[in-house]
Length: 224
Image (cartoon, rainbow, N blue to C red; front, top):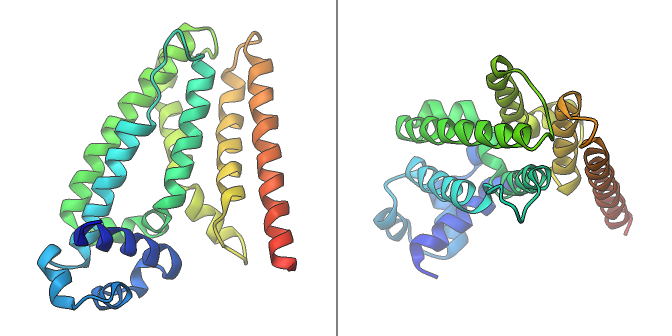
């Protein structure tokens, strides 16, 4: 792995473990066993590192995780797979959403990139919901589309931060992300058609089981 890539991956790990505000470029360099000068050869400052991390995240989100509804993939399966992938991405880059407003305020280039990516995501989510309506999975009025998209994106973006503010033990683990998926399924339920309701309930039960299993595994690990 190239030094630049090592810096990015080490930064992600440190930011997630210790919080972005508590990690300096000197900490990152020391963690990697390289000189600060070597780090600055690849990145001008910490904000430059964070911008590069977000660019990697955006590439993964837009190119790798976004579903393509086709005859081989059921529309409801497509959106469930997408939600699962999004929350797993949030797990990897969770530091970013724990301190999002501050990071965007400190880095105009990051804000510009973030807004650009978010507009693209909003458009794609809109298209996905329209495909679900065309397949008689959900039903909504045209004027409701923008609000539904916004609500789904709010949960995706801020669920982790909300969870952390509501719990004494605010450690982020798999069960937290499964809870986020369950919240999205609750939002979709009133719009789900009768024909598609059994599949939605099946998905809800699956994620509820995953959430409970993750919580049990965490409890067993803590008890050891």
